[in-house]
Image (tube, rainbow, N blue to C red; front, side, top):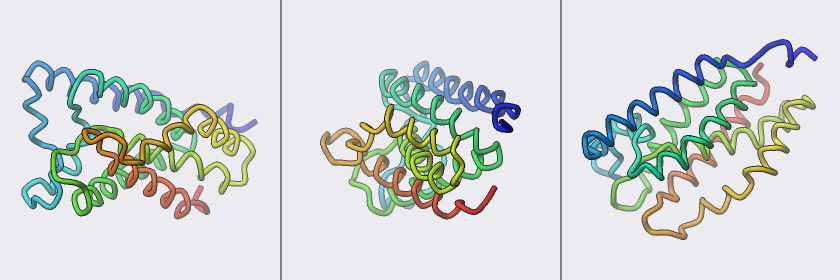
Amino acid sequence: MKLLKTRPDWHYLVLVSAILFVIEIINVLSGRWLNQFSIVPRDISTLPYIMTAPWLHISIAHFWSNFLTFVILSFLLLVFGLKRYALVSLLLMLSTGLFVWIFGRDGQHLGASGVVYGYFGYLVLAGWLSKRVWLALISVGVVFFYGGLIWGVLPTQSYISWESHLFGFVSGLFLAYQFRQSK
């Protein structure tokens, strides 16, 4: 199998994970000072923060809940290639952040969950659209192990940015569809 001979670019995943981890340490040590760089919907001064908000978390528990899923889904997305991983990640941050900025509820929106939900949406659909057995099996595995994430797109808790979850998931599905013919 060709896929087994080509390993994902682990070192990039380690680098991105380390950056997330270091930012969390700095944020904890600074009393969450970095959280001022979060998205506040329709506040023009926070529009640039659509690129910083995914790196920030409100608490250590929030960080770990996003971090572990982020690492696993990133690893699976890297099977599609480093270029695809980087492009999907960047486009997810931009699209999810922009939609949250335009349509989100008032308040601060931050955390990697929009990207995590984007990876989830991408992985659920991309494997099927690829028509490659191995990638379709990844889609099945993601649905089986992470299918419960879908409930996070509903507004069930006032302190959770379900908008980030929803827009991330929809953006992930859209990107999977857009890149379906790309290799």
